[in-house]
Structures are given as structure tokens and as C-alpha cells.
Image (cartoon, rainbow, N blue to C red; front, side, top):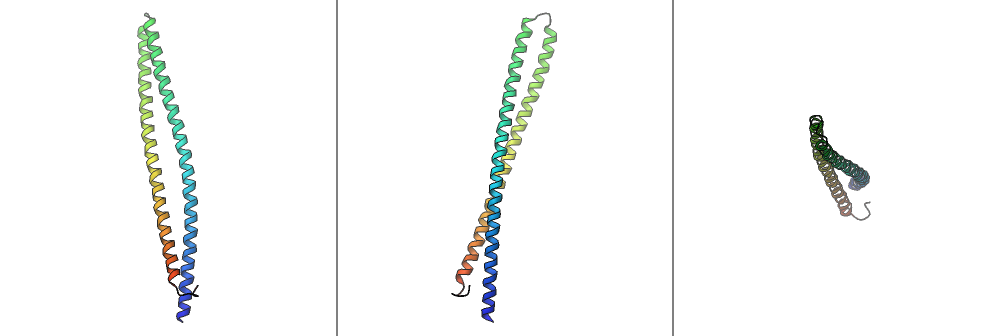
Length: 145
């Protein structure tokens, strides 16, 4: 009867060990997918940030050109000044949008890094459980497996 109990324990430990290895493999695959997704998101965010910076430079350049044109055309000064004010407002709005997007990008990056850290913790936990299972198997008498 004791032998049957030991055999059942060995079967449980073996089953737990197999389950832990399967969970670890699944977690590793998930971590790799997340890493790849994160890299793709980071690349996309970098591209968007570069585009926004280019748009900001273009808006500022346009604003400078419009200011120079306004100074050269005296009779249309009031109309051009109004247009420049509108461009400044738009440029400020663009800058605000860029700043908000950059803050959102930082938040997304922080959340992604936290997710990776959480997955690392889960991976470590699974490794610990697998080591415990291996230690239980090692403590069994010879021939019990």
C-alpha cells in the first residue's frame, strides 16, 4: 500500500513537472510574442514621433515664412497678421498634441515594461515550481519512478 502511495506521488510529481514545463514553454512563447509586439510598437511610436517632429518643424518654418511675407506686403498687413495668429494657434495646438502623444507613448512604454516584468516574475515562479517538482522527484527512493 505504501508502494502504491509512492507510485501515486511519483505520478503526481511527474504530472506537475510536465504541466510546469508546458506552462513555462507557453509563457516563453508569450514573452517572445510580447517582445516582438513591443518592438513593433516601439518602432511605430518612434516613426510617429519623427513624423510629429517633422510636422512641428514644417509648421514653424511655415510660420516664419508667413511672418516674412506679412512684413513685405504692407497693405495686406492686417489680413496676414490674422492668418499668422491662426497659424500660431494651430502650431500651439500641434505642439500640445505632440506633447500629449509623447506622454502617452511614455505611459505605453512603462505599461509594456511592467508587463514584461510581470511575465518575468511569472517565469521565475514557474521555474521555482519546476525546481521544487524536480527536488521532490529527487527525494523519492531509487526505483520509485
